[in-house]
Length: 257
Image (cartoon, rainbow, N blue to C red):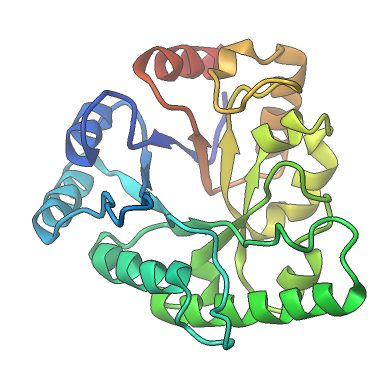
């Protein structure tokens, strides 16, 4: 494999917190996606300043980079301001992890209400508000290019296009989500690649949940994706977005095979 990209995986491979996972993965991958979450009772797994310092030291020792997955789908508050919980949390996460100099902040845009059969006025309003939310978060991140907007399953393939055309954010192409919806990922990936900083790869078959081992995916689906990355000299991060030690090792084996 003549790769120009860095291979990564998530911070939840062994049943432990982020720092033990990072120590376990150092030397096995080149990037770790810090998967941060917030649950309904307000609990979260935001690393403490002490953990951030240790993650930074580990990165320097092991030549690691980090990507950070923001915990909530981004949107503006009801008044069109920064009051929505997703932005409040995004700012806290970005400020806490800034010293790690993340390769990208991966995020979802919350478009559930307009993704299917929305009126043109509602869709236009959502696009305007999404652009503004990205402008705000991009200011915290050091520039909109540090934000990597991810495609989601069950959304139209062109759903993000109008937003991304208006602000120079980066892309996160989740190939597994495209497989899950029964799409050939190559046309989408080829078009998105010039602005793509992160690619998510995982086993995902229609009718099943995503984020399984890559080993379940037929080689005739995986190989063209890897060939395209080599052809285009992709220089970002390829994240095996799976969770669990068995899936991690079998995914790595499938990727190298």
